[in-house]
Amino acid sequence: MTTSVTDPLISVVIPNYNGEMCLPVCLNSLLEQSYRNLEIVVADNGSSDRSVHVLEANYPNVHLIKLSVNRGFSAAVNAGIQRVLGEFVVILNNDTRAEREFIRELYNALRDEHSAAMAAPKMLFARDHTIINSVGLGYSITGSNHDIGFGVKDAPQFASRNWVFGPCGGAGMFRRSVFEDVGPLDEDFFMYYEDVDYSFRAQLLGYKCIFAPTARVYHEEGASGGFLPKSRNYFFARNSFAVIVRDFPSRLIFKYAHTISWEIAKRTLSPLLKGDVSAVLGLCAAMGRLASTLKKRRVTQAHRRVPDSYIESILLRNRSVVKEIDLRGRPVEGVS
Image (cartoon, rainbow, N blue to C red; front, side):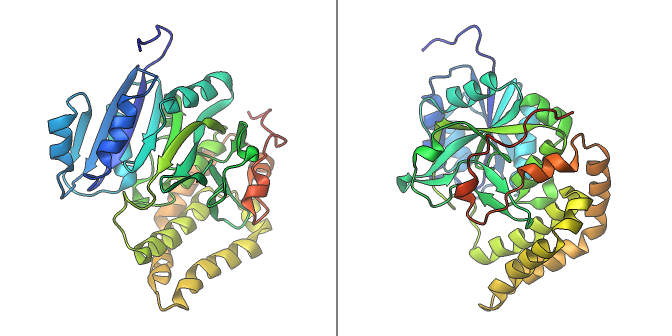
């Protein structure tokens, strides 16, 4: 298929760590995209497997960035974004497989929705293509993140474009201008919740995210991390607290203090009751970083462009996130 003269360059950034087995599936699906004006960049996080060899031997047109050590998801993405030239940027996990129209449909969503700066695809589980992994992020008044639709069978309610909080870090498209304005991903997160933090910072600047249901991608959950559940509990507790401190408007923190406090306690104590102290250690680590996080908060909140009322309007209130997928009635106009 030839490239249309009207198709802008789209860059795909794939952070990789020990993805020798899954990376070829991801790359092959990108090379088969109907959208041809692509550049693909893999930022390798000091892999100890044969990832780099596989790339250099089989994918000469894929740009490879080699980081000497594993600096985390955010650092790899940032390194890739610094390298790319596209007007639009896709961040994609190495353990995904994109349908042929994936890039085209994400682009169409941003082309059609001029007020959208980010697009979230329909991410389904690779093990069962009928079960949703994520149709975008939802962030709640409890200070917790949800992959909307997680574990739910795909249904008509997930068939139309809707506004969501942001794209899941595993797959999403951004206008390049977002990175130029919001800045890089926060590398202090290392992994987990960096997508939530970035979506929150983007929303504070007035950048909205559209869910593109016809952009489909399949995710082999957990294949790209290489971390144990206890490590996940540590990063969840540490990083979710950092998002609240840095991004949550002060008035809303006070208004929902009881629900936020309960969520923090539950997230920390639930693993502890099972003999896992990692979440407690994660919260302690977050407290140890409190001064630096508050410094970031001052910068983030000083530059925000939207009122508290807008942020409050896009926060989820129902614990059953699926019931809140229809966001079309929420305010999307009048953002200064």
